[in-house]
Amino acid sequence: MKNKGKIISINGQIVEVEFAEHTPKIHDILVLEEDREIKLEVYASTSATTFYCFTYSNPQKMYRGAGVINTGRPIEIPVGEAVLGRIIDIFGYQQDGLGEISREITMPIFSQATPFEDVIPPTKMLATGIKALDFFSPLLLGGKVGLFGGAGVGKTILLTEIIHNVVILNKDKNVSVFTGVGERTREGQELFESLEQSGVLRSVALVYGLMGENPAVRFRTAAVGATLAEYFRDGMNRDVLFFIDNVFRYAQAGNELSTLMNTIPSEAGYQATMASEMAAFHERLISNDNGNITSFEAVYVPADDITDYAVQSIFPYFDSVTVLSRDVYQQGRYPAIDLLSTQSSGLSIEIVGEDHYKAAIGAQNLLKEAEALERIVSLVGESELSQSDQAVYHRSKILRNYMTQNFFVVEIQTGKKGDFVPIEKTVQDVTDILDGKYDRVEPEQFLYIGDIRSVADTFPKTQTSVLFGSGSTGTPETAATAGAVAGGPVASAPPSSATPAVPLPTVAAPPPTANGTSANQSATGGTSNGTSGTA
Image (cartoon, rainbow, N blue to C red; front, side, top):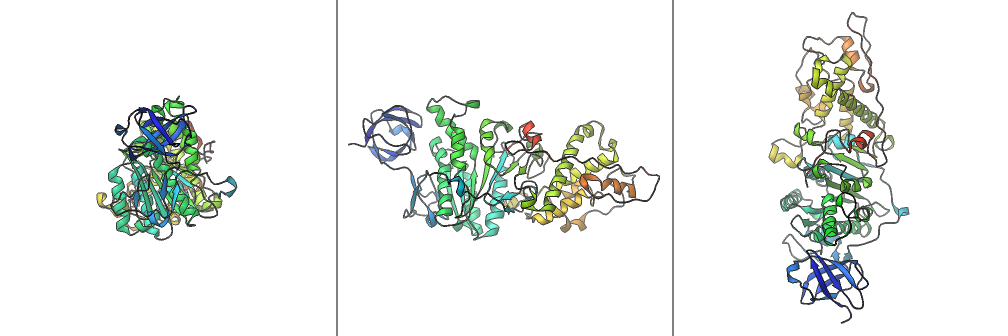
């Protein structure tokens, strides 16, 4: 038989095969002659007649000398309406127990990226109702969003809340693809049930490469998800929301396979091909004249080290970056977002508007000034700061607490109703905080509220300023000082023997670095206090 070869070695999930003639092409699927259900994919050549293959089945059924047959075709999966509301594996077979999936329309999971001249850059903001995200790291319709963090700081919960707010609360506007690479079975089942109960499952396609699967299955799961998204965009002319959890597991699976093939590693022991693998994946998730693909990607940060080579290889493809911090998580502020390390190319006047842009720059300036005061406060206490520094420090605490939020997806666990806050209200609330409107309110009052105006009547009423000690009565000069923070208006005050207001210096916004991060983030490798997240 012309298309027949044989196995010459087996090393875990890597099988080396030999074809004396009619050699296979890269990505061709081979099947074991004795059992056609055992599939291998040709990955790379080792000589003119021998090839490394991924095996998607248990290698215990294989042996040296066993015959393999080349099908002459790559992995093909069903696409379109048939997969909406269903869970599939990398071969397009059902995983939800709801019956076979129609294969009337199929596509190979490998394709060329859209030509550069056909790419449409994102220019419109996509609101999520999550205050910290929308304000500091606005998401772009048709862009890419990265959620970075170490183990256990809430990446998956944040991603699930985005799914709730963007998909469930906007039914029938988009189709969605969820790709679980190294996904926990429990989390995948909970997401499926949540989508089913909310009535949006019929507009979502799910593909899982579970955590317990072999690395070849996990490695190809990302390509399957990208293929589904491409067909919805180009074949059905629909806008697509693409979710993947977790991109690091994609890189990790490639590293496991590379090790088995005895290839020379690159930086930090990762495979030398990782940069090209990331490029091949991300450059398929773009927008063109047919429709948008907006991708949301959770990225595990190993050992809280955001300078890890795998993590850094993913950074360049994101329009918006959200960094989750273990320090913030341990302080009990959720979502545990590092507000200074979180940024977006969409934070510009042209996209978000002048009010939002100015408020965001003012908030970043305020947080930077407060960060510089942290060591002084830890040594001598907040009361020893100057009046202007106390104003800065107090408002920064209010701002950080204000950015906490109750999530819909954890209502059962917390017993608290979730909040969806429109970006217009967030911008107005932050502007009021910067202008000193709430200087008489304790920062703790701002924890886990929605927008301020809806709860302002519940704040304790006091004539005593909380800025300068319980003995201060909040003189006009105090108000003038408080209004001078982050470009806020300085209230005029009549002559008095009290200490005059001290205007605060204006701190320039940190310039972006080559990879799109702020200067302070680049210098520290992402955060000033460490980052974190779960696989």
